[in-house]
Image (tube, rainbow, N blue to C red; front, side, top):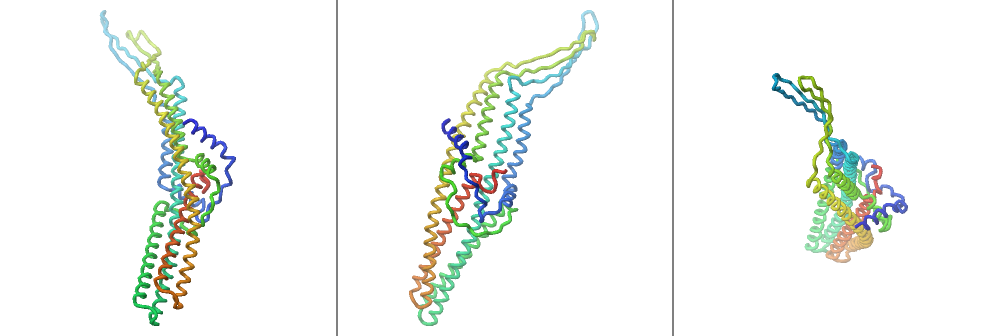
Length: 413
């Protein structure tokens, strides 16, 4: 467990020497100023910002402790055997005081509470950034899918027109005409479905980020990753907001355990008092000290806090391994999707050329309709596979850039 933590800390120390220059904001993503303004207004970020303000008050409350001054007054009437009465009273002011370094520990606990809330705000921004990137790319993908569907619709309608022409010339059967028109109708259905998907993507994006100015750009082509796998994993671990929350939680658990250990020595209550007795002939001024007697409750509280430290340390190790694994998987996704896109793009270009040649030949009276329809379906499938691989590769790379805080100036927040 300790070796893993030390290795991670070692990565964080050597990382600044290995980081390359941060890439500019990709052309198919919103500019940094627009993106950051939209992220700051995202509901989860707004909630985390209010939580940070609340944590500031909670931290100061912990630092000052719940101990307060209390004022008391007692009155009594004394009767003497020799006769007569004496009206007497006692007034006091007292307050528990923290001893054994408890004030410093409480200050540390208050600071830790605020640091955790600040890390949670950063994490909320990170999650909103990821969501913005994914939703934006999904939207651009639906635009490109709609354009592909429009292109295929034009292709299918041209084929149907060619079959109708050959039908008039007596060179095509009614079956061929019906098949071509059915294919055109299917292409129109696919175009309508693509438009509906685009509308849904716009709705999702505007629902989550209503203030974002939506200016569509062309979806960029996937590129090779900027860093090697080890550098990516180092960078993501060093910049992980989730890990920072867990680290701060471990520090707070350690402070809580130290505070419980110190609390085994109870805090005394110290006060001053004054009294009037014996028919006002006696004036008394004194100091009072009372100390609780600690027992099993305080010991068990300390043992519980020590175990919570073990829980927090185990959670830190789990988070480190989980984030490292997720990063490695994202790297693999980005690279494999890039390879698939290159192959799919080659296939899509050839299928598109074959479909164009087939349509041209059919218009000149060469070939048969079924072969033409097959070529169009192959073109549709290949174009869809190429777009899907492109989207997957682009989104995986942008996730890495976001997790490594290498996009939209996340380090400046």
